[in-house]
Picture 1 (cartoon, rainbow, N blue to C red):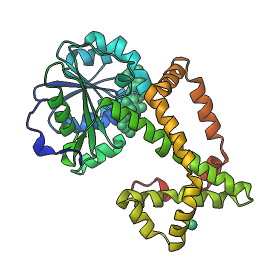
Picture 2: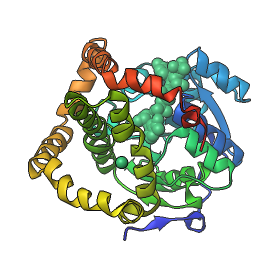
Picture 3: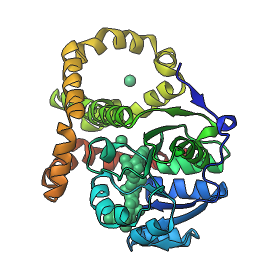
Picture 4: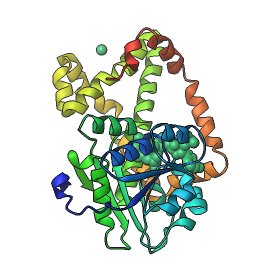
Amino acid sequence: MTKVYYDQDVTVKALEGKKIAVIGYGSQGHAHSQNLRDNGNDVIIGIRAGKSADKAKEDGFEVFSVAEATKQADVVMILIPDEQQADVYAAEIAPNLEAGNAIAFGHGFNIHFGTITPAADIDVFMVAPKGPGHMVRRQFAKGSAVPALFAVFQDATGNARDIAIAWAQGVGATRVGVLETTFKEETETDLFGEQAVLCGGTTHLVQAGFETLVEAGYQPEIAYFEVLHELKLIVDLMYEGGMEKMRYSISNTAEFGDYVSGPRVITPDVKDRMKDVLTDIQTGAFAKRFTDDYKAGFPDFHAMRAKQQGHQIEAVGAELRKMMPFVNEQQ
Ligand code: NDP
Ligand code: MG
Ligand code: MG
């Protein structure tokens, strides 16, 4: 089992006396900055004018342009969307860094794929909580935390690792455990997970199931309940206790059908195609496609999004969810 770091392993107060700038105040940005501030750190926000900037001011932060916040800070955590980071880094962050400063990320994408190349005299680390920002903040406020990964890409000062671990403590994660990774491992596994299983795999599995039932003449509303709505119950059980707890809770009929039909749907060639997806991630082909599309104004992205939004399952779901106001209540 890999080493897990807890509060008692944080022996160096590496953020003490340091000025911290969090760049971006969205999902991850608001959570990192509020948790670090509550843990006694000196945090300012670097952001463009707009909704997030107003929110950060409302939440009591000093708010500056990205360039000005970078200039003032010793440690700069970059939490704007991945596709925008390279441009913002070149224009506003890099020119305002000094030797011995540290930059940090919540995901390794730009460093790993080389769209950001930091100067050699800068520390570069990552702290990536394994959950969405609202959960990172909510668990912290309850006295708990979401686990996190940390990694050091470049240790210019000799203190980069201590700063990364101190950041993981500042965001609360050492309360429950922090694991060390590399930029390469975090980036490639994160992209693979979201593409092959969590986002791409799941949505397309659900859609294929929905289409199979509807094309066979069953009512779309019934199909929606069976293949999408009930997915949450199954995922919650897996989340709580793995496949075993889920299979323990479902009926024997469902469990028997799981063993008989699961392998008929997810055949060995599906795994071969997962390997192809992983290869495209490892070679940088996916990153290039995403970055090129961003530079062209995201034409493919917008077309694919529009096509998916037009799927029948979305219209059927929108109607059915009106019967179920509880689905949007915070659990
Ligand atoms: P969000 O989209 O939630 O927030 C982005 C923030 O950046 C907003 O405050 C936005 O402000 C600001 N912003 C956007 N463009 C610029 C710009 N050009 N200059 C200044 N500020 C800008 O991002 P996330 O929190 O989802 O993602 C941030 C990072 O965290 C990414 O690297 C992502 O991979 C990583 N991550 C995200 C997770 C998640 O659960 N969302 C989980 C783990 C890692 P405005 O309101 O003005 O648009
Ligand atoms: Mg991701
Ligand atoms: Mg059923």
